[in-house]
Length: 315
Image (cartoon, rainbow, N blue to C red):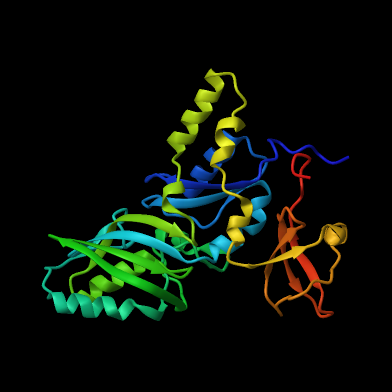
């Protein structure tokens, strides 16, 4: 007999505006509890110092969280110039102070160095793992371990303002880009050092900035529902984004109602205009109900790769 899941079966994506000072896992657990969700997962951690967009997947949406992990990100960052820290942010210990002495042209030339495709050596204070342990654990023990440079891409690096010793930039970058490392490297290039004092993620994939909600807003809705003796889902669920927004960049392949039964049982089906070796978003019938993602197999058929479980209210 299958175990009944703890929590309710709710599917969708909460576009959380994470506050500073909290870990991404703390934020995830709070959202999961507010929604009383049986399953939840986030889509790429933000440092406790950082604020901003943290998509949290509930229920069947967790099956597609990797696509958001792999998505481009956008950040607004403010760096304090003249001071370098061991963590490259304001949570670390100061390791060097130097005078600030560069021209506007030198700043622009330094910024240009980071645009486009480059190689980046991850910070020792990142969550990347070495021999099974995250790098930050070694760093906290005062150990330095080898890190390989990784390819990244900065699509845009826009100068916003320079006020005194604080430089603000807008950065649109590929997955795996460490803004702290860019800030530290930029400070070294300018000869004065720098560290992050404010970091806000303003974009993940194509999600709209104005759809973000805070934990305080979610908790207020939960309190309101309880005070009005209404099911919390009546106030909370309208804030959920559809789970297929995580894969909205994939080409849609619509499968007829006649073939739906075979597909939903894991069987490949014949469809027209199927792109070769390309992941696609699968919808069913005239209603275009999202049911998962698939790919053409060696026989030229659409083979499902990740299918959602349709709950009673969805079926």
